[in-house]
Length: 552
View 1 (cartoon, rainbow, N blue to C red):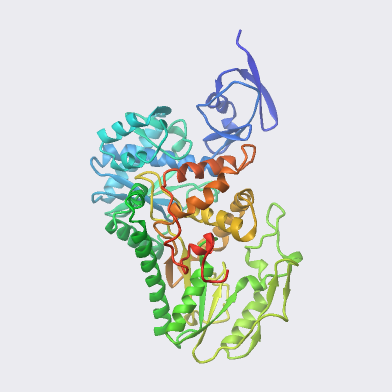
View 2 (view 1 turned 180 degrees about the vertical axis):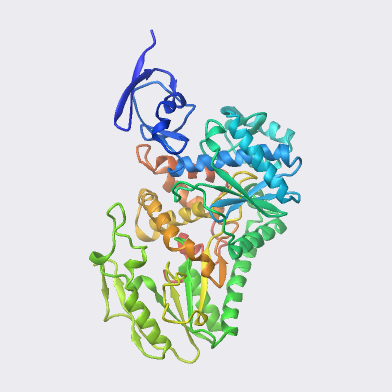
């Protein structure tokens, strides 16, 4: 006699046979969802739809509107485009490089045409209609290496050599096996929502629905400055032969990581020095430099170093943080969940800010406020008095710095805008990217713990709202920048690993952030640890790990 078990979904309890798969159960509820079901949460743990239910459980089905399910969806699309590419593009290797405008730039090892991309999209659509299964299997690591050697996938071979597990998880699609750092969709049918945008003869963009979209994939907008910075750093990484994690690990194991650290730091410092030189050469053209970027981009250190370089040219920079113009706590708007929204534009006393900056530019002396984060109130009497001299320049740092609403009373030609972000170029292999968002999250976890006394659960809890704020208040204005400064360092995750790994292991299995911590731990396992002794005191990385020469 088959035993029945009780499952609860959306406050409805039904009985199913013990041993029923989540996929079979999901078919009963798909009609209640506007998007395909990708994953499920079973008793608060993420599960693939192939998982079997053997006991009474609380189940939550997840679509691309969920962060983890969306990650699985994107990796499913990367698998799909790789599989289709084998047929359409023959011997052309596809390398998934970086995100760009709600999509992923896929570089090709050989030149492609617009017609190639049209055919590739058509083949992907055909594979979706075929409803091909994506099968999960555990295999011996050495057997996996043998397989990837046989299909000449050197990126996977090199990566798995640094994996110490006896068995690893692979996914099979048709006659292809692949390795991903996420749970995966159960079949190709649920991967119907995507688009391909031909960019140039070197590659195309895979567009998909993010958690910040409603019901459709947005049209692609090319952000040329961001793309060009990514391209420049990928070319430099290629010259240094450190495009993927195994190559970085080789620098560590050979004892040459100190050289790579010094080269990386020198190149980054020179980039910032060139920005300072550009500001100096335009002396008199503008008196305001606005700096903005997403969380944990290293804005504080970048601002301090930029000031140092400007002084070396004989200029006298003075700095203002927009955070000091917050309105009183009780006047701060709240988000949809009833929490204070400190990242919205309305959290800033914009009228006072615009008036004071205009007065400073006009040569008047102004006493700027200081915001007391303990009391939640601005102090208008203890702030610094600022008056610009002939060689002075005003540097303003804040998340809204690129928003054209800021200082709209001052002509655009009198403002120089810098966008700062750690645009991460190092990837795990040809299909597994390291996102800029993950890089920033690792930085933030360490900073919150070392400098602000917050545990890892706090950082993971706040991250979703931080990201949502960036999508509204920062990313839409990145093209307003006059220059993009990449604050990432090719070696940094190996260093961050030594600081963040113990914190991630402290996340309890009952925590709602356990799965996220486990995902990050699995990614970090691919990195050999890098000691911090060779990192200079003025490095951006010191803003997070400590030991820097600039006051935080």
